[in-house]
Length: 382
Image (cartoon, rainbow, N blue to C red):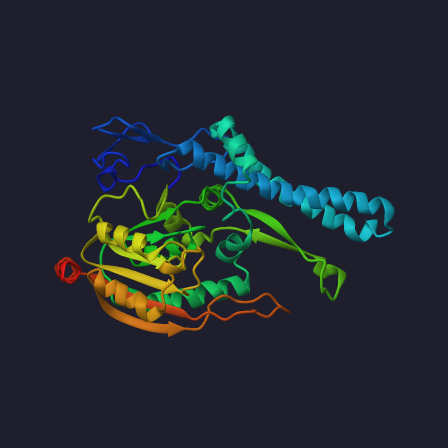
């Protein structure tokens, strides 16, 4: 939730000393080491509280992400402006130029809002190394989650129909969505859980979600390739959280943090959803954090492919070994099924690769976990 309210502090612990946090004037403070966790300074757009060891680094990452998105459309606008000086297609392509500038303005708003929170030396260091986050600073997930276009709605509907199968095996008031992105799935899950916490490390995603909570917006899809008619060059995409979902969207507790190192307290989560996220981080880290967070008998839900977006092959598991790893870490499998991809391709394009989606529901059993650890220790010692 934007800065108008805070998450229940009894659910949070200090990132340094792991002691409980206390709410303090739209911020949290550790009673042990007195470290203060607060939101950065921003213009126009509310920012979440940063739960990171080095806040300067993540603010610089976010600013660079928005700046690069702005620069992408700025370069296209400059290039087209120069081209129109020599072309006779000014009347036809002037709307495209305006669309580029409109998209540029969209991202400029976020970069300018973040500027007061950015440490200049940190920013220059990251810019010089071409570092910084590149995930979440485009329109793709925003379009899927909040455009309400038929193909986007169909994708969400297909996804939630699979999630419903998992919900049947899970109970509990507090659910957490890892890698929650633009917040649509966390919002949908409010229908099934009293409290939903979304964890996301990309401020690009969270800031755009917060902005939509304030007011609707739009962007332009520009397509100059393989079009049938001039009207196909531009498509205005309106963005809005539906009125039927707005209350639920506002009630989602958003945490800006690393999903494998969150500030949530031990044994504070009843259901942990890893939807299109289990292949983003190494499974060893994901399971360690899951076991820390889940209550006894709490559910871990995986949905998605095992496409793996990191290079460490030792952490690339088949579905069979993925399930075996869950069992080895004290989880009891409750459900396993495979499903067709839910994402809908753009018209006229073909997906170059097909990925199956696996749905796995597993309950954490600390006794089984201890038994597996004891067995492993015996094996290693022998």
